[in-house]
Amino acid sequence: MKLEPAQREALLAALDAMPRYLSDAFSGLTSDRARTPGADGSFAPVEQVWHLADLEREGFGPRIEKLLSEHEPRLPDFDGTTVAAARRYRELSLERGLSAFAEARRRNLAKLRTIAPDAWTRGGTQEGVGRVSLCDIPGFMSQHDASHRAEIEAWKKQRA
Image (tube, rainbow, N blue to C red; front, side):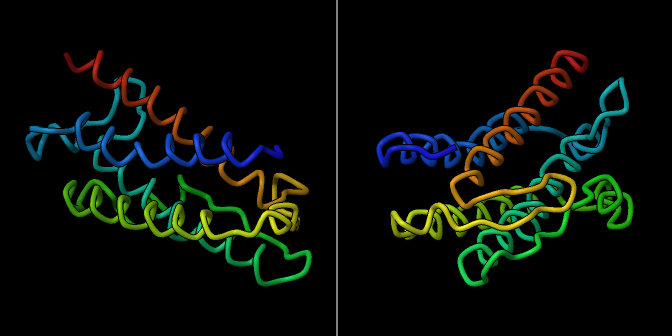
């Protein structure tokens, strides 16, 4: 998804809004509510934020780094469901998860904003996805954010 610089910056600005969205969406939740999953078994708020933080730190961040520093790297998958279970997200702090995500997102966006125009086409192979380029990463991040926003909005409606 090769974008013109202005389009890319608009996408990055939209990605920059996700930490505020999460903070607003989960503002004022009690500890018990923050640990309540969706009626359909979807992630509880605390699970949402820690999943997003870990994917940002262990998925998107390393992919960006590898694509910038290696020739045709192999990019591992990030199995969010397995990680969530292993790390027992429901036992963690919502506030710390929000902070961890905000910081990881800030670092990744800062790195993306420093990429030279000719480097956006650097590519590799992501497990379970196939060929990807740096220019694809912001779009993947945006799609992932959108799916979590939809889950969160559904959770809020179920719990209203």
